[in-house]
Length: 472
Image (tube, rainbow, N blue to C red; front, side, top):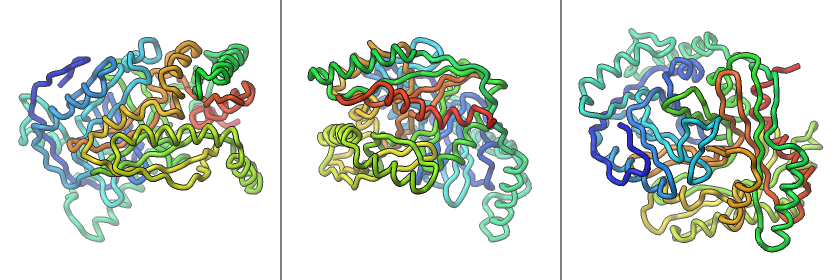
């Protein structure tokens, strides 16, 4: 099913979904066997999902895109014949939004509209205890019998699966066999090394960057802005075709506490992927989880240097000011929906290449809400846009010589109950076989210095750049 852009009325069509438990599988092997467009969602304290193909596609453009997607999703889920062995494996829509309302028009963002979500035709869901295979179908030909037949066929296709073993056997021997099968699978699907980089092309020259930052600082000091986030793009040529299963596997190993994602267009060969540290929002019941992530420094070469850098970050007036602007705005954006908002203790969050200031924020809603209502209210946070939002977005458009596309925008999932989880698409790249375009940005405030902000951008390229560049 395809929902046209700006759709206001959606015809109800049958959704049929069937799930079966299967032995544990290798992440890389399952993703390598998946059909485009592929989907990956892997988040802390959530199930990992690998999607293959599409049973339904929802898309929208313009300022009403959040409501259009919600309307289409409600219609899709309203006519569901769903049999799932666990809540985590029930049908979910995966996708996201462009940073700007009018979407992305220029390469490398061909095929990425202002909003797009897919219901995978086949999905593998990995929870702490089990692995599940789900087949979804939508349309006049979707029947329980046909979907169950497809489920059996897809189970046979799983990499390394022993088809003679029933997935419903709950025993110690079955668990041991599952672990052995997964270990053999991982061994057979060894993760390849990075492809190597042959060329680099910046969209923003150092001199242009200096002028852009200085102009933004002038606007802030004049009172037109409080903060603005300016970004850069870096296009790299690759020595060999990029393997998305390999790069996502390496990112998962190196950044296990980040939100790992993959989104691909229905047509074309682009892949948007990343491992972002920033949650935008998650909703379950009336409980909302989000947080402020702003203020950055590097990692030390020794534990003592690492601690010194962390303390310097905590004590930095510039970083503390930038961070508090973000936290304050998030609390204000949640307040119309919330019965209460709670702010946790500010800490330093350490990642492989950088350290960030982080403040957890939770809220209890006053009434039931759809997660997309919260996504719309929070995007863009001052951590990726600025304050005031409208003036910051104008400055971004005037200053950045490239199209942000889906960079720094919401990516995640929604379910039939209106719950969901979204991250901010940072530490990311959009790639074809031999080319990848990376994105990174920094917050500009009154005392920002162009050279230091330039250096911070280069630091934020490292998570993706390291997985593309061969070790010397």
